[in-house]
Image 1: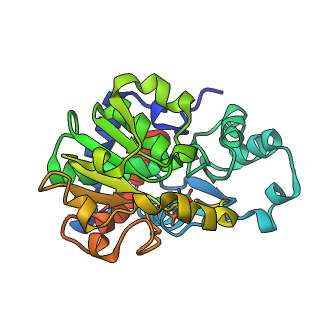
Image 2: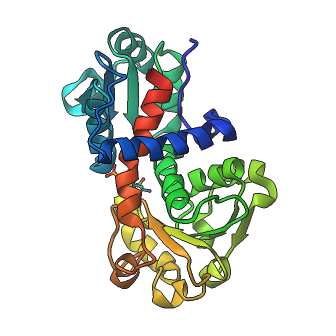
Length: 300
Ligand code: CP
Ligand code: NVA
């Protein structure tokens, strides 16, 4: 199958990712100027959600409408996805009807299998392994606030989860240094860290990771699918909360990001989320603009 897919940041070259971010900034300006731009007229995006979503669903749906196309929301409750139709067959069928497919699910190999049997582009809208669309928005947000991220120091504090894995890939693709502080039983996967080489430093103390960092990022302590582990995770992660005293160790003009939804006063305090250093609302908005650039790149 010859379509381009976006299952992880590694599916694009650093040059392509850079162009996507610049295009996202342009598309944002165009929208704010009230200009219509509809290169995806008569195109349809199918969106398969095995997990909940606000930002991803609304940004892809609004993005498709703004680009002149349409988006279909498919939940496992009322499609054959939830009744065990083979992924390969679903991919063959959907890709004969729509022009691209976005999938949010649990196992990453499901999106890989789907993509392998799809004749149209497949976009990863979050799996247990990666959340690459969020990284496009995060990198666009950095670009707008601070310019080039190359050479900067980013601190990831908290769980070695899908977002952390995508930050590791971003460190490779955008050439920044990533300090990661996680409790010892919640480290990112070695298979994701290893290829990043010296771009990534694993640390056990949040303070050490954040010291002199230009960007501090965290995420929930229990991701979707891990709700039952919340109590034990709260104990393990207590020393990894991003609060004012931790953020004070970062460089003076450091930014704070969180993909949201946040558990306020758990992984991040209200004070940090509401502080002038927090760019979480720009980050959420940029999901729309960055994904429009991605949809245009894959579909137009
Ligand atoms: N950040 C993010 O992906 O949010 P949703 O779960 O609301 O889509
Ligand atoms: N790590 C979180 C991100 C949500 C956008 C999760 O997978 O639930």
